[in-house]
Length: 114
Length: 114
Image (cartoon, rainbow over all chains, first blue to last red; front, side, top):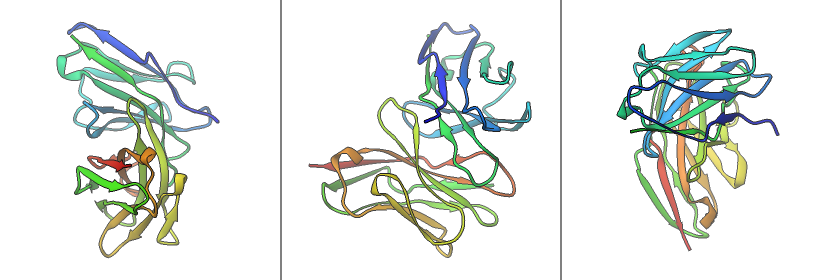
């Protein structure tokens, strides 16, 4: 069964450093998402991506964040200068279309900023 | 703007008893509604969805949910709970007109007691 894969599973970084979280969405999907979850609580939307551009983003997704689909298979989230409050579980998801299909989530990357 | 409420942080139920996890939503137009489950240190797994048609939808692991338009609710149910159903459950909505992203409720922790 196809699945969304995320690497690394756990990333520890120092405050102020740049991190790149990587995701490989399901191959025939067209919409890609990043969500984050702090301490097993609410799942917060960061950004959605379609047709090689951002289609929606939340207030959390400020100038420190960027996304890229560099090679047609990977989908990355970059945080330029990490803050302590960026510590969270980051989930990548993909869906076949932008309407009535469900999203498929990866297992997540736990980011710890120290 | 779309929003999802899950009025109960925690639901406790004895094994073998029926369970209900509540969800209400606010969205313009006809919503697309989803339930996801999250086990510890795992990603979100899709359980079921309502798009259109029959108000009672059936999903994975014996779960079902009932869409009630007048009450703007989409409660998750299972006739007989298992200890293995213990997890965090998220209701989500997708606005078919104004957005492709999924908006999640705050989650309900279900504990099934042996």
